[in-house]
Amino acid sequence: MNHERFMKIAIKLAETALQKDEVPVGAVFVADGEILATGINDTNRSLCGTRHAEFLGIEQILQTYTAEIFMKVDLYVTVEPCVMCAAALRQLGIRAVYFGCANDRFGGCGSVLRVNADKSPIMSPFKVFPGLYRKEAIMLLRRFYIQENEKAPTPKTKKSRLLKTDFVPLELDRYVLDKDHLNELNSIKLTESHHAQAT
Amino acid sequence: MEFLQIGNDPLDRPLELIDIYATIIPAKDSRLVLERLKDSLPEEVHELSHLRRLNRIDDEGEIRLDLAICSVDTIDRDKLDSIIQGLPCSKIRIEQAPKFPARTKEQCTTWNTKVWPSFWRSNPNCLPAVLTADEKDQMTYYVNKLAEQVRDKHKIHNKDLPIATFAVDPDTQTIVATDFDARNSSGNPLEHSVMRCIRKVAELELERRREPNAVKGYLCLNMHLYTTHEPCSMCAMAMVHSRVGRLVYIRDMPQTGAINPLSAQGYCIHNNAKLNWRFNTWKPQDDLQIDLPDVSDTINA
Image (cartoon, rainbow over all chains, first blue to last red; front, side, top):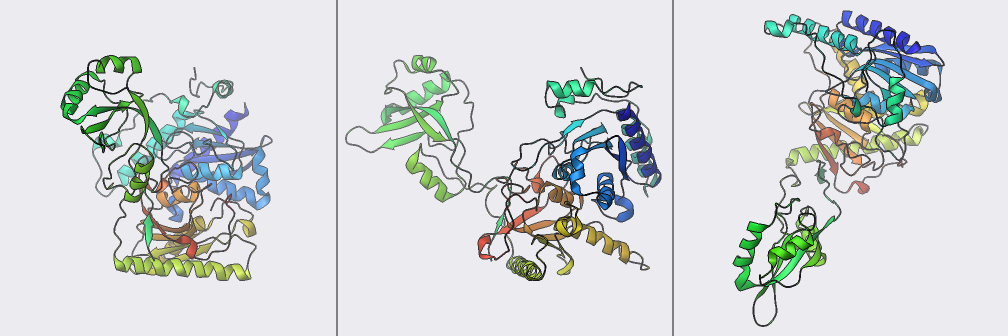
């Protein structure tokens, strides 16, 4: 049940980001069943395109622990980590990443590149488990983009302000590497039927 | 200083070979043979338009031609034999040919002495793009200055890795921010010089916006980043997120770099069609002439 608890907190954090006019992404870092740190996107406030939720959480952890801790750290994040964050997490040696929805434009765990698992002579790969509270994560992003459009100096067409509620299925084989991995993903039980229907 | 542009095509791609069928025919029958082949052969499965299809054999008597029929992957030997039955062809041989066009004229000449000959057609993707003399001068100046700073800093502080980055505003020709690698002193393995430099640009922008009527900047839009070592995937993608206009780096990082098509996984993040921003990238042609303190191959720069 813990997956559910941590992902729900990540969703709450993403809500906070939305209220602060940041891209709604929330991240929760967990070791031994305890939350070590959380992060929300901070790119707009900081005027810095690299201040993603993951980085804020990572920096918080490193104020207390040395980097070796990441061997036993799992990340719960509402959106698939981008190429930059996936590379950062791999360099740290994170154990696993659980995420809500895919990041079609920047995703580094299978959507655009597979930085988490491509062969490297130096770094170990990490596994990702997609689709936890996916619809909630997507709806948060959609609400953000509508909010942005409404604030635009010349508001776009009405269509761009309509909140869509349909969902295309997640392409699991982009993220899931083999049968064991799929079984592992399918064994994640959420009380609500909110994770990817993996078959 | 001369610079090489780093695209998606390796300039020194190794010779990759492919098996082709070849046969010798009398020159006078070449039209007949080529027409029959054109009518009967299935479509070539590889892109082999760079190969010289007909090669004149210089010997006494009747002029003969060595003909590349098609790749072995295109048709079975039995089927090919039945197609050429009755044609004035010598016994079919299997030869090795370059799978891809050569990248330079010199490379083409060398390959032609070893394997089936190919044409040299200048390849627009690998022709060096043009830098103006002014640009080259500026780039030379910043590269030398960056190398000097990293050497000087390393003399007094060698706890951290000797990797450094400048963010340069190409319009005003000023260094906006300078930063050094700090992963060891900070205890954060992600404190690479590129990440720190990008963050510093943002901090300066935040500060500037406190002034009334400040002209707003946007991230590192169109800035030029100079860095001592080929950036890792994290730093390369940070540059995409930050809308950098140009990257100049000095040393390749073959095991960890995310720019050079020959480095690590060959991501070419600076020029990746799947991403929403690209920047042109250069490195000094003779980078080993530039003295930099050693950095291990296994480092993500």
